[in-house]
Length: 379
Image: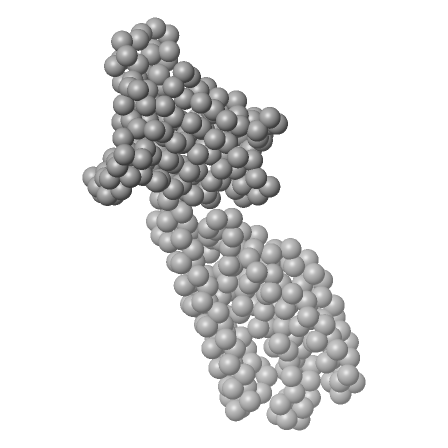
């Protein structure tokens, strides 16, 4: 994906499939070092120059432990680190041919680093994909064939297996990077879409409130404030710049936020104790209630009354908005949503859905309209 550097750890949603692989490779190098030391400890007396082998394994141990932190991720594991790692692997293979006896070498004795050399190939695969892994395999293979046993069947078999494993891991990492890049792009698009929908809902609600005040012939600071908020939200939607959300405390009493919609026509019934919700959740739920109240004022008729009922349950909060207006045909809501109107689909259902809740609208001709909003208290 454009903008992603090769070898970078692409994250989506705070997660990365590469980091566990790097941790596995780092752990493998330490365990392979212990195996190489144990193998040499059991056979060093058979070598022609055993002291040289101990010196190499001591240096290999120091390098492995010193580079463990570098193998924790692709940013720290630079190509210089991998080149040094490859140099240790090749040195160990070449030195094995120099300090071991010809008879043992032709009998198929293991090299000093043994399976530790595979850690270098894995590091190259994780860093750059299957091509660097194949290149590291070729270098180690040439060292094995040229200085430790020649083109014997066991040698070639080990090199082929090492190359296949490295290429397989490298290919999987490349596919994982592409998949995570696509997922990260999808998450960014989804976040931008949700932000634009939020702005569109705010604009929709503000326009309805302004129109309601104008229809009643009212003017003054409240009308000017609503018009200003609508203008700022509209500019943010057009320019694609997200506006800062209104700051809300950590916990908010839903009764206070919903209570501003009560008047001579609208009655509020709520518990006697505070109905506490996370601030943003309470604000969005109250905005959905406000959209339902606006629909009552616009469509239920001038003489209609409405009731807001707040129910505080152990796991969720339910708010019902019911009116005694003429009601409507249930198919009208589906037609409005299909035509792109934001009243119920976005200002009410969209808000509640983003909070992980449900919004149900009950309506029938001559029976009024009831909107039931249910939102979990946590999560």
